[in-house]
Length: 355
Image 1 (tube, rainbow, N blue to C red):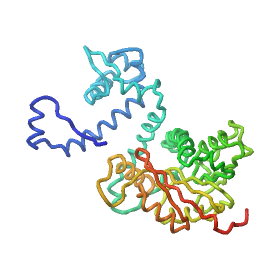
Image 2: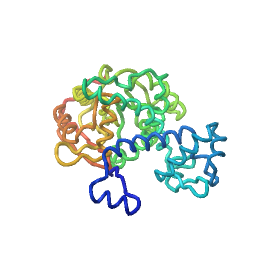
Image 3: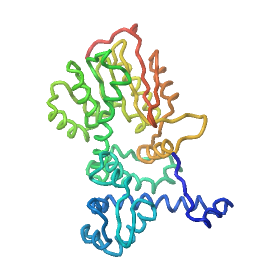
Image 4: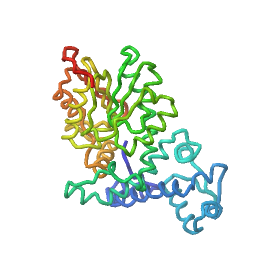
């Protein structure tokens, strides 16, 4: 995937071909504008106003309590970017916009991610200082009353619903029938809930910060799984994990902590696993030192940096950490832009005393 500018009309094509178009300066301007008009359209509930058919700018302005001039300018910009159609003063949804940016969307995570992008964008205004000093305040440790928190929580829920099916399929868990599951940084617990529903004899432990425990506990009670899923409340760097787990997961967790902390938490998880246990790390793909970095990876890694002071870690780096911790076998898979890396603990490792 690449973010590009495409010429419109013969004159622009000639200028593009001659190398006279200021592509990079225009990308710096238009990229910012595109982000903001999409976020504004979602925030102001603009796109839902056209679900029943084309509308005038004045009608949409009235329904959304916006100024008529401001709404017309916003809609024209959305039309210019190809996000809306415009015919005879009427604005209507494109098929893509209806699919991703309205309440009819079957991809709820797309709207949640846009809400989160609004708050992350504020962090990008601090990018130069973050790069210069290397100091970043980890947004995950911020006050839950902050503006970004509801969007972040909803995004976690959307992502959590996807983890369990992939995990079950990739590891062929029905052949393993895990009994004790450790979910490191498991957020609102959706992966643990899904696994416990799939495996009736499974018990799960989630390591998570206090800010997410309350939300997660409510979901566990709603699923009637409070007797099989428990939280250990606190930082993964400081909490006692216990021992005897045959399956552990770190889903989108390593990219919110530093490299030194990654090594520490992986080692703690290794020590918590029973002989023959498996640790699975699910995260963003990064190719390492060779070749170009995909745009999606580069942007994701930059987002992790400005929000947590971390990055997308290369597969080889993650595998190295697993071997350093004592895992004797690793396996990796790259589905789309993500990765699954599994570390297998030797059956010959002496069992630790259950805590």
